[in-house]
Length: 120
Length: 414
Image 1 (tube, one colour):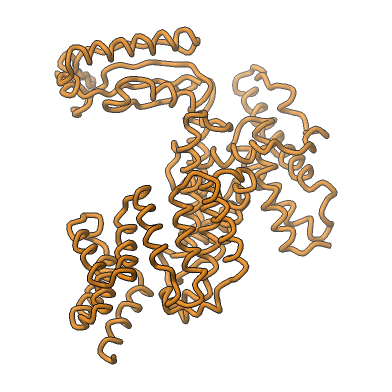
Image 2: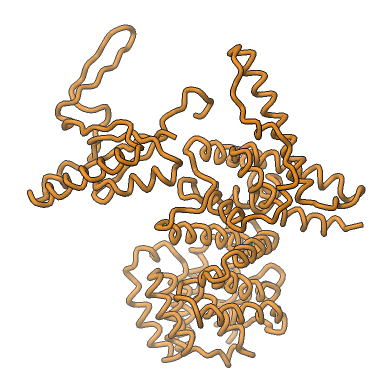
């Protein structure tokens, strides 16, 4: 099954980290990514730019409205994601638990909808 | 010919085995569970008149598998018409189980089923409902009645839970090794919740609903057979038995009777023997845990021939240990009572003073009720009466309120 692992992060708690702590976490991300590439479970994944750079588009009555900022304002924002293809939910949860931000804030595990079936 | 009760017992035992075999073979938990429920219904109708088949489990698996295959053929036919393309179905998915399904089941299958129903990706009410239906073999009607909710509500809860299992990809498998501990805790929590719902009915006029307590004991006993060396499983089974043993003495005419005032001749000696033996065995060999300690406390109470003969210093020592594992306010309250029994009411009241600022107890009548009790023990009758009344106003349970008002009334008479 395919799952998206949505990494939520609190920018202020990242900012409070020391340079050494931050590079340690980045190294952990590198190891994690390499691990799931080697196991064949990696489908895609990226880090996202800060929500300062986000714009939100809404179309109402044919009129496009663009606002600056993310869709919803939270203390935590979506900082990155992985899409993995793995055996089942237990495996996806185990992978999510290895993502460094799971310790700092949290990682949401969402099944990717299988368009061939009726899973909803 | 077997009696209806014997057949019902047999069907309950076979439910998880038949279901596990079907999920193993056909994959999808949701429809396998529906098919097994239909097979149970057929069996309940046919077996009492036609007799129990030679292999009841094989019968259930075959009937459920036929039903499942019928549904799949219908689905495939519909999809074929819609898509005008043949769907691939593994040959196995359309075959009725053969003699290999008569082999004894892997014991992990029954366990895996329990772990699936109690998966943390499901909300607790869903875990409870699924466990009772898929592992316990209860019908939706029975579960709804036990929890005093409309049948439609319970049916919807079960359907949603099954959809969630499919959509999230919760596996039918033993949990990963590093997750085994917390996942077993989740299972025990569900079983204890079922027991408590039956024992201290949280709603309704009745104080106890015995069908849920006996079902919880039956399921925990099954788990204990599967995992005899898990100390906390043994501990929970012992705790349930030792608590259930006091059932007949716990109420009279719908009113609550506290432990100290119970007629101990009404206690179930067989359950006390079994529970005490289980907890002794667990404490001697396994790592300690909160269920074992609670069971040990219940065993000390059960072994006292009268309230006066209770070994309170042992109970106090056990509560101190329990507080290390579960530092909750309720455990602290119970420790205060034990302190009062060992070192006198003033020492107990001092423990209560330390709990005054605890926000978890602010909304509860329990702290007030215990204080009333210790004040009475200390001879401060007027203050005790005020606290009994205050606690009675704060509780939502009618039997509890009645009990507290009676205690306040007795002070005047004394």
